[in-house]
Amino acid sequence: MKIRRSGRLVDMTHYLLLHPYQLVPLTFFSERYRSAKSSISEDLVIIKEQFEQQGIGTILTVPGAAGGVKFISKMSKQEAIKIEEELKQLLAVPERILPGGYLYMTDILGHPKYINQIGRLFASVFSGNQIDVVMTVATKGIPLAYSVASHLNVPVVVVRRDSRVTEGSTVSINYISGSSKRIQTMTLARRSLTAGANVLIIDDFMKAGGTINGMISLLDEFQATLAGIGVFVESEGTEERLVEKYVSMLKLTRVDEKEKRIEIATGNYTDEEEKFLSR
Amino acid sequence: MKIRRSGRLVDMTHYLLLHPYQLVPLTFFSERYRSAKSSISEDLVIIKEQFEQQGIGTILTVPGAAGGVKFISKMSKQEAIKIEEELKQLLAVPERILPGGYLYMTDILGHPKYINQIGRLFASVFSGNQIDVVMTVATKGIPLAYSVASHLNVPVVVVRRDSRVTEGSTVSINYISGSSKRIQTMTLARRSLTAGANVLIIDDFMKAGGTINGMISLLDEFQATLAGIGVFVESEGTEERLVEKYVSMLKLTRVDEKEKRIEIATGNYTDEEEKFLSR
Image (tube, rainbow over all chains, first blue to last red; front, side, top):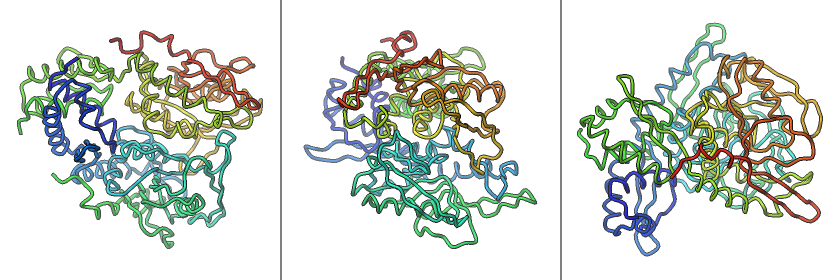
């Protein structure tokens, strides 16, 4: 069935949003809608313009016989700052203070609205890196890691602190937790990572960075490559940082259990100016 | 800035896809694009038609002063069967057999393509139920539960087998694992569920149903209500089923470790004929 421009625009928008980072040949669309390639090209110009104007992302055109278009999920700096402000307010509530100076964030980390936005922010920041897989550690950061992975259209693998029969054979390492200085174990299913894979590590919280450091050691075991580190909230600690290069969205600068005060600042993601959609 | 129809269609499609189950007043769109409500209504007719034709979902219109439109994420039966067939082939590979007759599914459960599709299938099946929150148990089913939750636009809460300081105070119950008959513990952060909430339980695998039964007991502790149970793969076991009413996508009918044979049948989701998009 031949589909008119208005119908094509709706369906192509849906298709592209659902398949980020995937090269779609123009013939795919022209066959899908029984329309001339020139019409499809015009549709894509309209979609690209809207995507960029509304801060959704951009559409890359790869020329040549093996070419096509590719939707890259991106965010504008302006939207990132808006979300950051909203999250700061949401987090700076005294009721969130937990014993030991931790912050209750489980509600935010399970909420599709926030998780999708934070995921898109990190996908924007790492849009220039070659990434084959997103890695996180169980449990709280999994929805966020999955969100980043789905915006980058790559699988997510989950490192665990225990090992289960349903994972098959596993690789385990011991690492020193940065904050408690205790020896801990982390485990990853052998099948879940191939040698040479470019891995983006995503976590919800980083104090000294011991857990992330453990994941980096695990990458060595799998002969995989670190492609980047993204952390939702980093905590400004007194100890030295075990991880050097990372991108954080927020920075917890002060948690005062006695005075019931929380102070949250902007993370270092704002250094990545050029990674966001300019508009 | 006034935006033309073609631009509006692209942006409205994106907006609706990102905000399922959310009532959007027509004035929101007419102000956003500086367009007459009558034009917006025409746009919505085009979008609704495409969404239904392409098996994306439907758009409900709520009349009256407090009215608006609502996007409901749905799948066509035809697409569900196509995905089911693909997953069956993917799963019925001898290399997936693990000791004890388990199946390695971790790769599928971390892959955005499959997780998004399975999530949309369950969102379609439960689209008629009142659901306030999706619940799952750590670890492997979390991306799937999050996907279902995001298609229903509700938060996801994760039951754990351990408890961590970052969860705050928790409620724990003991339950009997259906397969191993051992006593196990599960824990949920007290803040993560409010009394009276309608809870959809999502899990990746169900054997006798002990774990799901445990989650149901946990709902009682929180005075929450069970709104439905969705399971990606159920295993046809010899023991009696502890859970009565559930929806499964696939059914593992046979795993023969010695002969390296896996047999997978269709789950009972096909009984829910009327819950899918008809086209």
